[in-house]
Image 1: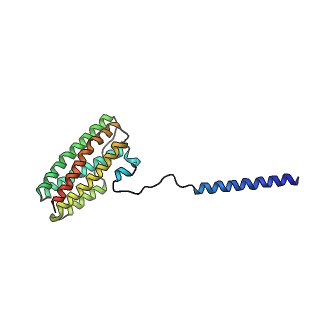
Image 2: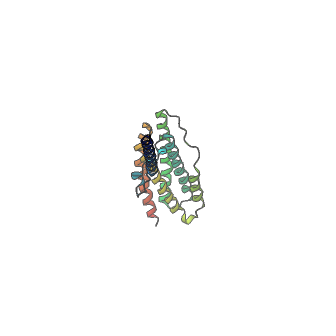
Image 3: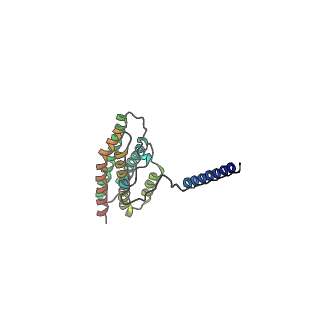
Length: 196
């Protein structure tokens, strides 16, 4: 009988030790998600955020970007003093109105019921408000800086969606439009350099 009690006691202690070891292993397991540090080329190295692969989110961001380009460029048509800046602004109004129309066609072709935003999000509206406050001497430079930032963000968005998007017709639109955005970005940088 003493031997049965001793065996049962050893078994209980062994089981308790195994259970404590399993708990320690579970606690020491690192989280599954690892955050990567951004690099100089975020579109190429950071995984696409899940919300940028969904058509409604891509459409909202793409249309907001177009609205910002058109609105800021309309302001530039009135306030810019440099002729090259004014020419660029007119081209942006025309090009980004067409981009929005092309995106709406891609949405219709996809059969999805996605409503583009009707107003700028607060962060882009804030940039418009800031642009309106810039004095005449600093306006052209500020407008071109905003164009560079806006086109870089749009290029990253379009390239990511072209690679990882969830809707074929909208992916094709993003892939076809990205080179135009790249051209606008390069030209914006050139115009800004010419202002020095």
